[in-house]
Length: 169
Image (cartoon, rainbow, N blue to C red; front, side, top):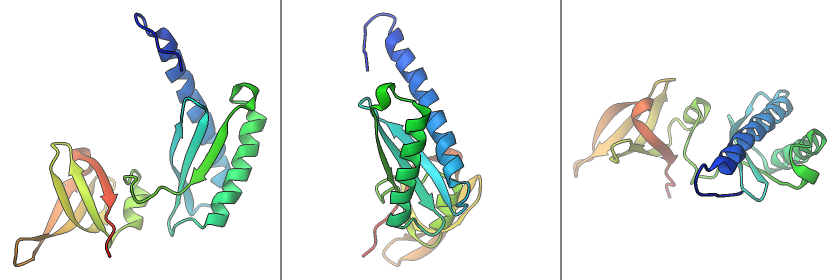
């Protein structure tokens, strides 16, 4: 990546080119996953070193064998598409880890019944069991106070900064 003072145009060109490459990678990944409707692309990231990270999730999780297969298949597709100069890139296909926030409606639905931590745009947090997920809102059941009273809370998605699944032992 080239950073400059002044106009910053090289950075702008890099960002625009990067978005075009991400769009192309998404198209290849979606085409690859078309025969597997239970799996879906969550996110794509490209580091300045051309390290491509593709996060794939599934309605019931993703077996490691599938991730390996997807990696090989997508690598061949990206090589054939020649998206990177001299095909100088690396590819990692993985499922999003527990430290990654939920991004898609399908992920919220998949995690109904699990404990989640919701960070709101104002910085406050709500923690509870995810009861429902619609296209516009989440419903969680919070446990409040020493008496551990249950309270159901609806949260509009446009009020949420991020939501993560809590690890419960």
